Length: 88
Image (cartoon, rainbow, N blue to C red; front, top):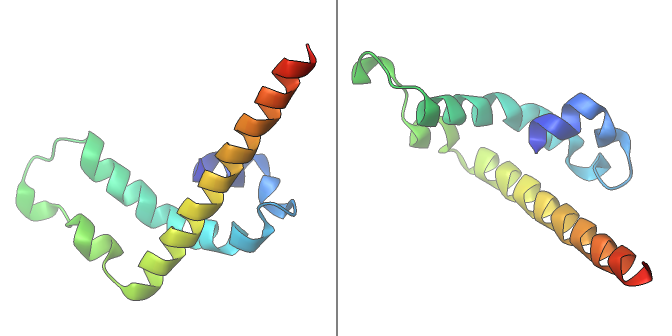
């Protein structure tokens, strides 16, 4: 979701404005974590640990804000779709 928001340019909207900076800063770390989950490394010694990528307090707070904003966006979208389905 973070990539989609940044790539679409929607971070400038009022809904995403508060977390736009958090998204931009956190995205490289989130990509690194995803890479750890989807790639089988040739050697475990070459791989960073997720805790090392996300272990500092500032990063954890940033990810918490991004997570909360994404959850709120999903809830809002779901409500809009439910209301729209009632209208049809």
